[in-house]
Amino acid sequence: MAPPIDFIISPVAFLTGSVFVLLYYLVPYFWAFSHLRDIPGPPAALLSNFWLLIVCRAGKRYKYVDEAHKRYGPIVRIQPNHVSIADEEAIQTIYGHGTGLLKSIFTSRDRAEHSRKRKVVAHSFAPQSMRNFEPFIHSWLKVFLKKWDDIADQKAQQDGYANVEGRVWLNYLVLDIIGDLAFGAPFGVLENASEDVKVRISDNKTINLPVITSLTTRSEIAATVGTLPELRPYLKWIPDPFFHAGVTGMNNLRSLGTARIVDRLNNPPPADRHKDLLERVREGRDDKGEPFGMGELTAEALTVLIAGTDTTSSTFAALMYHVVRTPGVLQKLQAELDAALPADTMVPSFDQVKTLPYLGAIINESLRHHSSISLGLPREIPQGTQGITIKGRYYPPGTVLSIPIYTVHHLKEVWGPDAEEFRPDRWENLTPRQKKAFIPFSYGPRACLGRNLAEMELRLITAAWARRYDFVLRKDEMEVNEGLARKPIAVNVGLKRREIAV
Image (cartoon, rainbow, N blue to C red):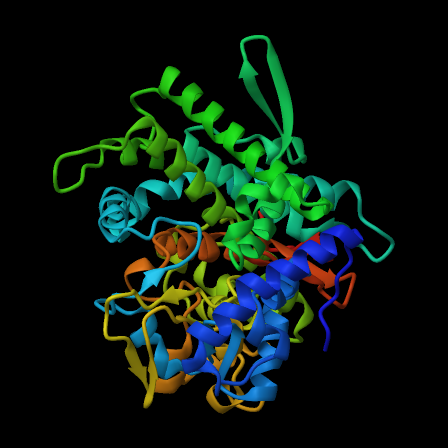
């Protein structure tokens, strides 16, 4: 299947690009990548990075890489020096501790630098710290439910259900939770039911920034340019609205992060307020006793904002869609929640829901089936090393390897003939192979630091809305678009209050 190209380039740009491909890719291909020539893949991907760039630009990388694996097998070349391996046995070798492989896009590749930052941040996301974050989640979850109560009471249709776009509301909720945690104050998107956030850029000027749009376009351009980093200095000159929107999104988020950090430092919270994530990061020290500087503080807060909203809100939206769409799932979940919670519970505590088995099965099946991070996170074998061998195949230094998460989460030889179906009951009896293949938060020393927070949010928020409302699906298909996260475009549902809700 040929990937779509919906942007226009001039004859001069086409000629220039063609020469660039010939000189920059074809020549190195014949000289440097001869050790990979026997590995199959889409013909264009064997010669150039542009195949992967184009499918990323189309927002469908996970789909085209998955189709390539179905056609060519478990080992596929998706760039001249990039090999995608759809085999759970390779996860430990590529992503595990002590492998020596380098992260190859966008974040610091320096191991000492990464280690220092991780030590400062990690304590904030440790399991024992999660209790301190629960009040933040409770506070904004109550606002969210009151908003939906108003919609249910005031906008019911003839069938008794009020229409809502679940994805955008869940995005509002997660944004204000993360805003409160990362910057010391919410963005106000939930209360205002709008993505526009006021940002003071000078003493005399305040602007509105569309935070959800900015997060989306930034994610899309990051995934696309990550396939061809040489494009970064030239993004604003590329005659394509996609890249212009991405640059604007990046600039918007930088402005937002800087303004929020400055405001937070100039206006510290009351002493009796629960410690937010920013305060914990400020208190953190590495093994040399060094704290974060102002630039690092802003960068880490933005990292939490980006990583903590895009993936989590996408998972929430997909979870809601599949729970409402799949017969019997919502009803079984409601029965479990009704048995575990008092009738007057609006927002449960984490202790009340952290071990509920069917709730956990729904969350895990959503993380497997939807896979918000679906692309293969690339790791490069460093120069000067001996290379690595995976299942009898040798890969020399300079080779980039990745595990396509979406594909591994849908392998029928691992998950069974119903791998494409949403079936939470499969989590009652996982095989060792299935446990090994399940990597929604990646794996190893660079796995998601915010996993504990995400899992707490998933249990609390899912339990709250599933217990309080009944739902119908207004649109059967859920379209998705992929940047760094695979995001549902919309989840249109109808909701009404359950009689048990108080």
